[in-house]
Length: 210
Image 1 (cartoon, rainbow, N blue to C red):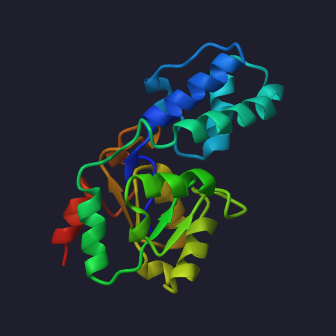
Image 2: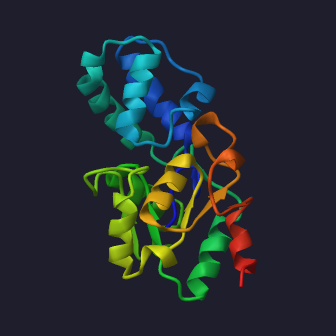
Protein backbone atom coordinates (compact mmCIF):
# COMPACT_ATOMS: atom_id res chain seq x y z
CA UNK A 1 0.00 0.00 0.00
CA UNK A 2 1.48 3.31 -1.08
CA UNK A 3 0.36 6.82 -0.19
CA UNK A 4 0.09 9.42 -2.97
CA UNK A 5 0.60 13.07 -1.95
CA UNK A 6 4.05 13.57 -0.48
CA UNK A 7 5.08 9.97 -1.20
CA UNK A 8 4.72 9.45 -4.94
CA UNK A 9 3.99 12.95 -6.16
CA UNK A 10 4.86 16.42 -4.88
CA UNK A 11 1.45 18.04 -5.21
CA UNK A 12 1.99 21.09 -3.02
CA UNK A 13 1.87 23.40 -6.04
CA UNK A 14 -1.56 22.03 -7.00
CA UNK A 15 -2.88 22.51 -3.48
CA UNK A 16 -1.60 26.09 -3.35
CA UNK A 17 -3.03 26.99 -6.77
CA UNK A 18 -6.46 25.52 -5.97
CA UNK A 19 -6.60 27.20 -2.57
CA UNK A 20 -5.46 30.52 -4.04
CA UNK A 21 -8.34 30.40 -6.48
CA UNK A 22 -10.81 29.42 -3.78
CA UNK A 23 -9.71 32.15 -1.39
CA UNK A 24 -9.63 34.77 -4.12
CA UNK A 25 -13.20 33.91 -5.16
CA UNK A 26 -14.27 34.23 -1.53
CA UNK A 27 -12.50 37.56 -1.00
CA UNK A 28 -10.17 36.03 1.59
CA UNK A 29 -6.38 36.42 2.03
CA UNK A 30 -4.14 33.78 0.51
CA UNK A 31 -1.65 31.61 2.39
CA UNK A 32 1.99 30.89 1.69
CA UNK A 33 3.06 27.47 0.38
CA UNK A 34 4.82 26.83 3.71
CA UNK A 35 1.54 27.39 5.57
CA UNK A 36 -0.38 25.12 3.21
CA UNK A 37 2.22 22.36 3.50
CA UNK A 38 1.60 21.93 7.23
CA UNK A 39 -2.11 21.27 6.58
CA UNK A 40 -1.78 18.61 3.89
CA UNK A 41 -2.35 14.94 4.61
CA UNK A 42 -5.68 14.44 6.36
CA UNK A 43 -7.93 14.77 3.34
CA UNK A 44 -9.16 17.64 1.23
CA UNK A 45 -12.08 18.41 3.50
CA UNK A 46 -9.75 18.81 6.47
CA UNK A 47 -7.45 20.97 4.35
CA UNK A 48 -10.25 23.35 3.38
CA UNK A 49 -11.50 23.62 6.94
CA UNK A 50 -7.98 24.26 8.23
CA UNK A 51 -7.41 26.98 5.66
CA UNK A 52 -10.66 28.73 6.52
CA UNK A 53 -9.71 28.67 10.18
CA UNK A 54 -6.21 30.00 9.42
CA UNK A 55 -7.52 32.99 7.48
CA UNK A 56 -10.21 33.74 10.07
CA UNK A 57 -13.20 32.91 7.88
CA UNK A 58 -16.58 31.92 9.26
CA UNK A 59 -16.81 28.12 9.44
CA UNK A 60 -20.33 28.43 8.02
CA UNK A 61 -18.70 29.22 4.66
CA UNK A 62 -17.31 25.70 4.39
CA UNK A 63 -19.82 24.46 1.81
CA UNK A 64 -19.08 27.45 -0.41
CA UNK A 65 -15.34 26.93 0.02
CA UNK A 66 -15.55 23.18 -0.65
CA UNK A 67 -17.43 23.69 -3.91
CA UNK A 68 -14.96 26.31 -5.09
CA UNK A 69 -11.96 24.25 -4.03
CA UNK A 70 -13.14 21.23 -6.01
CA UNK A 71 -13.65 23.37 -9.10
CA UNK A 72 -10.20 24.91 -8.88
CA UNK A 73 -8.44 21.66 -8.01
CA UNK A 74 -9.99 19.85 -10.93
CA UNK A 75 -8.72 22.62 -13.21
CA UNK A 76 -5.11 22.41 -11.97
CA UNK A 77 -4.83 18.74 -11.00
CA UNK A 78 -1.30 17.62 -11.88
CA UNK A 79 -0.31 20.88 -13.53
CA UNK A 80 2.06 21.97 -10.76
CA UNK A 81 2.89 18.46 -9.52
CA UNK A 82 5.99 16.33 -10.11
CA UNK A 83 7.10 12.80 -9.37
CA UNK A 84 9.64 12.45 -6.60
CA UNK A 85 12.99 10.99 -7.63
CA UNK A 86 13.07 7.20 -7.66
CA UNK A 87 9.29 6.70 -7.62
CA UNK A 88 8.95 5.06 -11.02
CA UNK A 89 12.01 2.87 -10.43
CA UNK A 90 10.80 1.74 -7.02
CA UNK A 91 7.31 0.84 -8.19
CA UNK A 92 8.63 -0.97 -11.24
CA UNK A 93 11.01 -2.99 -9.05
CA UNK A 94 8.14 -4.10 -6.85
CA UNK A 95 6.03 -5.02 -9.86
CA UNK A 96 8.86 -7.08 -11.34
CA UNK A 97 8.87 -9.14 -8.14
CA UNK A 98 5.21 -9.89 -8.64
CA UNK A 99 4.03 -7.84 -5.68
CA UNK A 100 0.48 -6.55 -5.73
CA UNK A 101 0.26 -2.82 -5.15
CA UNK A 102 -2.49 -0.46 -4.06
CA UNK A 103 -2.39 3.31 -3.97
CA UNK A 104 -4.13 4.36 -0.76
CA UNK A 105 -4.65 8.09 -0.36
CA UNK A 106 -6.86 10.50 1.55
CA UNK A 107 -7.22 12.47 -1.69
CA UNK A 108 -10.67 12.14 -3.28
CA UNK A 109 -10.72 9.36 -5.88
CA UNK A 110 -11.87 11.79 -8.57
CA UNK A 111 -8.59 13.69 -8.13
CA UNK A 112 -6.31 10.70 -7.45
CA UNK A 113 -7.06 8.69 -10.58
CA UNK A 114 -6.43 11.49 -13.12
CA UNK A 115 -3.24 12.47 -11.29
CA UNK A 116 -1.87 8.94 -11.44
CA UNK A 117 -2.77 8.75 -15.12
CA UNK A 118 -1.11 12.08 -15.86
CA UNK A 119 2.10 11.03 -14.13
CA UNK A 120 2.23 7.59 -15.77
CA UNK A 121 1.68 5.64 -12.55
CA UNK A 122 -1.85 4.27 -12.98
CA UNK A 123 -0.63 1.00 -14.47
CA UNK A 124 1.52 0.27 -11.44
CA UNK A 125 -1.41 -0.42 -9.14
CA UNK A 126 -3.92 -3.25 -8.81
CA UNK A 127 -6.19 -0.95 -6.83
CA UNK A 128 -6.54 2.78 -6.19
CA UNK A 129 -8.54 3.90 -3.16
CA UNK A 130 -9.32 7.52 -2.34
CA UNK A 131 -10.32 9.19 0.88
CA UNK A 132 -13.98 9.02 -0.10
CA UNK A 133 -13.98 5.26 -0.70
CA UNK A 134 -14.32 4.45 3.00
CA UNK A 135 -16.32 5.76 5.94
CA UNK A 136 -13.13 6.96 7.64
CA UNK A 137 -9.76 8.25 6.45
CA UNK A 138 -6.17 7.65 7.57
CA UNK A 139 -5.01 7.80 10.37
CA UNK A 140 -7.97 5.51 11.06
CA UNK A 141 -6.97 1.91 10.26
CA UNK A 142 -10.15 1.15 8.30
CA UNK A 143 -8.78 2.13 4.85
CA UNK A 144 -5.72 -0.08 5.35
CA UNK A 145 -7.77 -3.05 6.53
CA UNK A 146 -10.15 -2.75 3.57
CA UNK A 147 -7.22 -2.41 1.19
CA UNK A 148 -5.63 -5.55 2.59
CA UNK A 149 -8.91 -7.35 1.93
CA UNK A 150 -8.91 -6.10 -1.67
CA UNK A 151 -5.32 -7.26 -2.13
CA UNK A 152 -6.09 -10.63 -0.53
CA UNK A 153 -3.34 -10.23 2.06
CA UNK A 154 -3.01 -10.22 5.82
CA UNK A 155 -2.23 -6.84 7.47
CA UNK A 156 0.87 -8.26 9.15
CA UNK A 157 2.27 -9.12 5.70
CA UNK A 158 1.21 -5.92 3.94
CA UNK A 159 3.60 -2.97 3.95
CA UNK A 160 2.37 0.62 4.14
CA UNK A 161 4.65 3.21 2.51
CA UNK A 162 3.89 6.83 3.30
CA UNK A 163 5.33 10.19 4.25
CA UNK A 164 3.65 11.14 7.50
CA UNK A 165 2.40 10.25 10.95
CA UNK A 166 -1.03 9.71 9.36
CA UNK A 167 0.28 6.70 7.47
CA UNK A 168 2.28 5.40 10.43
CA UNK A 169 -0.56 5.71 12.92
CA UNK A 170 -2.96 3.98 10.55
CA UNK A 171 -0.47 1.18 9.92
CA UNK A 172 0.21 0.63 13.61
CA UNK A 173 -3.52 0.46 14.36
CA UNK A 174 -4.11 -1.94 11.46
CA UNK A 175 -1.19 -4.18 12.38
CA UNK A 176 0.77 -3.41 9.20
CA UNK A 177 4.52 -2.76 8.94
CA UNK A 178 5.28 0.76 7.76
CA UNK A 179 8.11 2.59 6.00
CA UNK A 180 8.18 6.37 5.68
CA UNK A 181 9.97 8.43 3.05
CA UNK A 182 12.19 11.19 4.40
CA UNK A 183 10.78 13.81 2.05
CA UNK A 184 7.09 14.71 1.84
CA UNK A 185 4.95 16.76 4.20
CA UNK A 186 4.28 15.21 7.65
CA UNK A 187 2.38 18.28 8.83
CA UNK A 188 5.57 20.34 9.08
CA UNK A 189 7.16 18.02 11.65
CA UNK A 190 10.43 16.01 11.35
CA UNK A 191 9.44 12.64 9.91
CA UNK A 192 12.19 10.72 11.69
CA UNK A 193 10.43 11.46 14.95
CA UNK A 194 7.49 9.31 13.87
CA UNK A 195 7.09 5.74 15.12
CA UNK A 196 7.81 3.67 11.99
CA UNK A 197 9.69 0.50 11.08
CA UNK A 198 12.16 2.34 8.87
CA UNK A 199 12.82 5.31 6.63
CA UNK A 200 13.87 5.55 3.00
CA UNK A 201 15.21 8.53 1.08
CA UNK A 202 13.76 7.32 -2.21
CA UNK A 203 11.45 4.54 -3.39
CA UNK A 204 14.28 3.38 -5.63
CA UNK A 205 15.88 1.94 -2.48
CA UNK A 206 13.18 -0.73 -2.56
CA UNK A 207 14.80 -2.18 -5.66
CA UNK A 208 17.83 -3.18 -3.57
CA UNK A 209 15.84 -4.87 -0.80
CA UNK A 210 15.92 -8.65 -0.83
